[in-house]
Length: 273
Image (cartoon, rainbow, N blue to C red; front, top):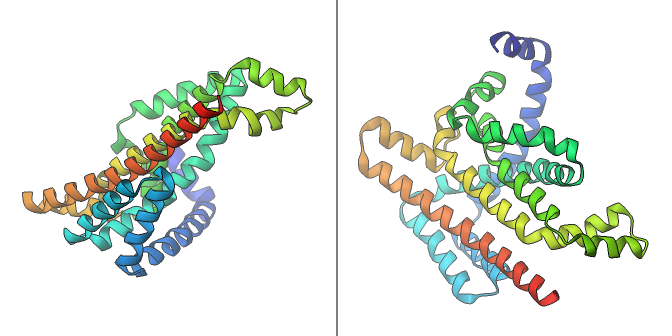
């Protein structure tokens, strides 16, 4: 492993650095937007997002209150850093995990290769992911994002695979009978019917990414996780508790919004059926 890491750093260090720089540009852009926006605007955006997801004024008000509580704890700036990391990590997980789940559902040989890797990724302790990420990309937010992506992607791949394989074969066969291509069947039949399962996978991926925040703070990810880490290092239970409470509030917001959207898709699917 040491030899492999040394080879990658020496032979492909420039490529890794270019990738890290491009990823950092996206992260900084999102983070500056969140940290520079007035808190009232962010609270309004959270309420609007919850309203669009669940079509519920009560949910929108509750999520705005949850976001306000994070600021009331004095961790608004750290929370914006954490949200930026989560958004980038989950975005990469979706771009990589969704196609992989589709391929796994469509092709049995791909699934035979993917499933053992997913088992391995979910078995290895989360601390271990920090080692190769830090060795290849140094300390900071980029290795934290990549370690989070590796840790959080498996649920999305598994539930995408499961959702597509559970689509009624007669429905897909009927679409093919009307002349639909494999791509059209995937886009027009399988993905819409599997969407509730995919949304559940997205929810689980988001929760796992958020759970990685504290661990990733050990390599310089900062954000709310850094508050928990400082509380641990200083023996300050109050500071650690405040950071943990902020993470819980962020988890509630992400969970309720994604769950509400998934439930609305499930209800729409039932009505369509």
